[in-house]
Amino acid sequence: MKILILGSNGHLGKYFVDLLKSQKNVVIFTVSSSNSLEHRKNHSAIDLNKDIKKLYNLIIKNNFNLIINCLLIKNIHNKFDTVIPKKIVNFLSRKKFKSITWIEVSSYSILLKHKNHYMIEKKRFELFLYNKFRNNLKNLKILRIGNFLEGQYLDKIFFFKFLNNIIIPSNPLNNIFLTN
Image 1 (cartoon, one colour):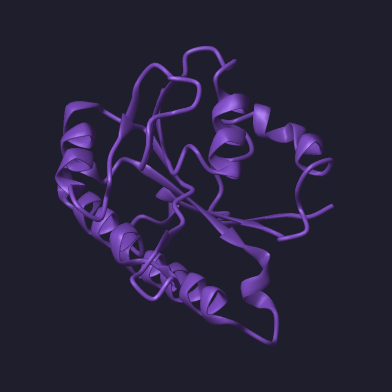
Image 2: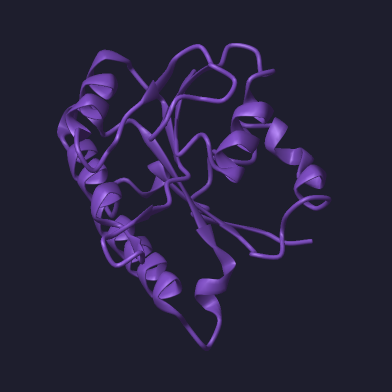
């Protein structure tokens, strides 16, 4: 299985890399805006705002089974932005890439009553994803993590180790909630 992790130098991206690198028969590719602190094998430093075609070429060159989106891109107003992830999903909506599963790392906070810009944009992006994957929802997984879930609680998420059974369930489960 080939997995691409977008935003691999962030907190959650690093966690996924560390968790998945010990799995048998898994090849991990990573993308972030800068070189990896650990100089990982199969890492690409790509500024997606300037050269998204490098990412497209990486996707074309490799036959990925899974893409995990941990990107946190901000616009010129320093607000969370989903323009780049939308471009990537639109690229993937081509017939050739329909078999790739997309895991969106989202936030449980989008379900809260009072919303800020980040929560609103996350929710809009989730709706965009549902629309794009509407004919193939088995290839969309939205992982909602509470903003209180870090440190000691992240260490307790042991079930990620069973990648084929939990993150990619065979039933039509699209939202996975992680709480303490």
